[in-house]
Image (cartoon, rainbow over all chains, first blue to last red; front, side):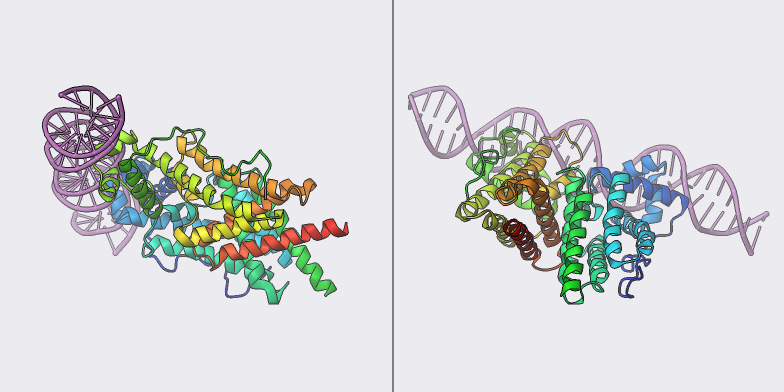
Length: 211
Length: 211
DNA sequence: TGCCAGGTATACAGATCGGTCTACTTCTGT
DNA sequence: ACAGAAGTAGACCGATCTGTATACCTGGCA
């Protein structure tokens, strides 16, 4: 399922904020920070705890990252990168736009089941970052914009005239399912969203065949 | 648009966590806390700031609420209560299940436009509260369960057999729109969700008329 | 050999955190 | 007249916060 060049799925998101070279100590710190930030929230986790969990001294943390804010940036950029890397082969394996869209929902379901019981890390981080000029803000909105573009580009061959609207609807179903999963509103939220996406696509394909 | 007794729309949500009597000072404190918590996040706001913004001493805060955690509980319970009070007359004014569902999306749009640029306060609070046993957790999940029940009960007369599925789909569209609004994914998210909900309901009504 | 990046260990600084305390005042209802 | 609730003013506590500093160790590389 090749995509338009406007949405290069293998690209890293972090063109904006500077990335930090990951020495072994930095890598362990980032892993610990990621786990703690996601589980407990960003403001609830101190740098001392990150250092202790990573088996690293605080000096190493500040030699590598410079500030806690930068650790937050790396945390989000890393998760964004890993999500896109997780999604990419599944998109490649899809042979139709229809299957491509469903592959996104299935990938999200598997991603959530594997390691994200508390919902989308970007949405959660957004709740703690009020400053629009914070470097993490660009990563958060960047991933959401990328997902919207992905859905829209995927459905464009199916429905060129209504691709924007359809892409937005799929985006709402997807985001809603992530929230529903994180807040345990009802079980199988991603699967339900996938089903509704399939219905939606079937309707579009049907109206295209008969119209 | 009368509702089944299972979802009494005028009831307060906070049967669980104890509520605090709102003296004038406590009311001002709650107003300030609500604004600060929503804008900056819960962990980012200290009790000293709340007291200063409310023009109240810290002693008054602790005389009334006892702990910051309790202020958080009151904040969420209060927002939940105000949202339901905001929604209730709009539901009453709707004369069909179809209009009732659309009224929810319209109420959310107006609610968001008026005072919630950063999305759903429950979702945002959830991002900062990891402990399931925290008294605020019940309020958060309680509101989401109530909304799901509301959607489901609203569509039951339209499609008794598929009310659960339809209610869940509306819930996903609604939650997705709240997130899309808060993260500024695209403009008019609530309106778009409303449109898609209308399409969904039209399809159900159509299949009921012709089937 | 010597250099230096990457690391440990630990102490420290200044600020802020949630929470408590004493002392005094002001209003209201009986 | 008096009690009690609600409040101000402000000092204080121990803990924790982000961030910095000094001193030392280790492996690889020119």
